[in-house]
View 1: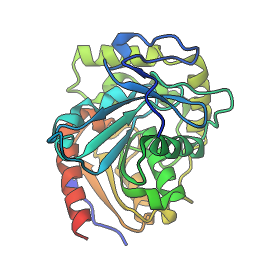
View 2 (view 1 turned 180 degrees about the vertical axis):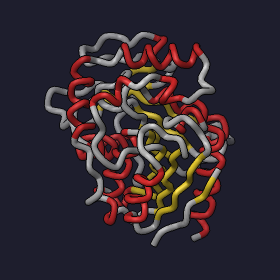
View 3 (view 1 turned 120 degrees about the vertical axis):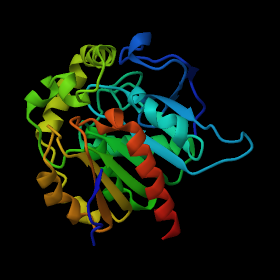
View 4 (view 1 turned 30 degrees about the horizontal axis):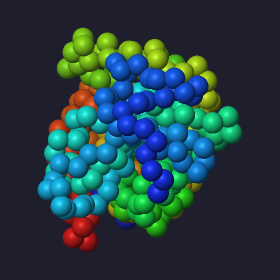
Amino acid sequence: MKWGLAVAGLPALSEGMGLNAEGAAIPEQTRERGGSTILLKSGISAYYKEDWLGAPWLNSDPVIFLHGNLETSAIWYGWVPRMAQRYRLFRPDLPGFGGSTAPANFEWSLAGFAKFLADFLDAMGIQSAHIVGAKTGGAIAMQFAASYPQRTRTVVVASGPFNALSPKTENNSQQLRLGSAATSEEIAYFDKLREDMRPETKRQMETLLAAINVEDLLPRISARTLIITSDQSALQTVETVLRYQPKIPNSRLLVLTSDAYHVAVANAEECVTNVLAFYQQAGKA
């Protein structure tokens, strides 16, 4: 592991039933069991999991997790056991993914996803939260932090892209995403997530990813920010990250020793250890 330098509510509609855009159930193998759906004011039916493993009479600061493309909120499974002992976790499926719908008028852009997150927080009765995003979810987290600074306590970006990605990226092998330590069962699971992606979501995300450019957003992010990448990432080099990360005023960079670029999954334990330390430091500032 290498550290870089720090620089300058509506009721639930249903329990345990994920729905696709047409209202049909999502296959069990592509989502976690349990969970809830809630209807947002935008018309999106959002599927989410809430986790709290602390004493039932206590509450804690909320943390919102944003998954990446070609997957669902289930990818955060490795973060729950330790983090939910200290924080209340919310893991929504993004619109058009897993059990969440994307209405015909949904804006397929980083700003559109950030608005979804703001509406989700409203529905949950949450004024502000820690925001954690993986891959495309990391870009959404940066957009949210820039657009809604008063609602952002901290930001964690795990392998989030700063600039446009080639359409070929979504065809990368799961071994490239998850690293050499990924098992055949794990690879098969993520292949299934990719296969089950809705055609409309896939088409819209291809356009979004080809146009990503968060450079103008970075100076507007006022929350303390932790950027996590890996030293052998096939998504973007450390040098590329270093061109962008210092533009976030109150940010630091964590470079993990890993041949995976989906570090939120492949290096979950290491990520959690560092994120918990980051939260502790941010709370003392």
